[in-house]
Image (cartoon, rainbow, N blue to C red; front, side, top):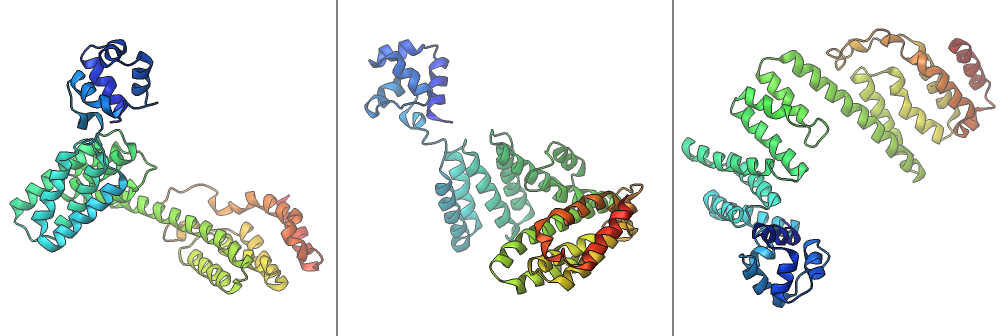
Length: 353
């Protein structure tokens, strides 16, 4: 909690006005107002009197036991890890728990300690009772973080709580915890959801979700590779660009993605190199793929996706836009004088009508 908030809460809890605080300390009311709005801080010489007036102590006012910096937490985490490595789990565990008791409101510290101890606990040769006791205290740390005001930390703590419930085979409680989590956050709760469904015997639901995730990852990978190819060509590293393009093509074919997609990166490289024969060959394949029937559900990753009517002719809707780009984009100027290029445009323009 920031200092200005502590000052405001302590003052209001005692029923004091800003004017009364100012009068007792011999300062102006605007000065107290600035303290509580975080514009300025009390003079160091006033801290003892201010702490006495608000019936607290200077450490509380200065937030010494509220928060640690990210650097302090990182250094402490390294210290705990080294303690566990050299002196044993019990020593490091005690050190970490004592620190969380010293700074009970520092959510980042609580989460870092929980994650560190959680991982270390997996590698310890402990009795069932000892493991359960440590697990309970680590879970309590996650629960405290899950209630904090930092949305990102709270999400991560809730995710870890759901994971713990899954490991304990408390499937209904794990599902309830997952249902509370937003969809688009990291770590992605979908992996945990699929794992939970698999444990509950809901294999079809798990397969559908995981195949959907795999498709998303593949598509994101293709977009990233496409972005990477451009600077590589500018740098003159066409060999690497070509290898990536061929790898992307093989990936599309292996996972049964749309044949049109398999040509995109090789075409990007061929156009950048102004390779007329290869560009025309790929262009012919791409335009053909737009009109050719494609059974997406024959591929291994689409099998468990919802079937959509007319999905086998999806390319025809994109054909006019593709032709317009070919006709106007200056990247294709090196092909304009080629009879085959003109013929392809004329042929597919007629088919698009």
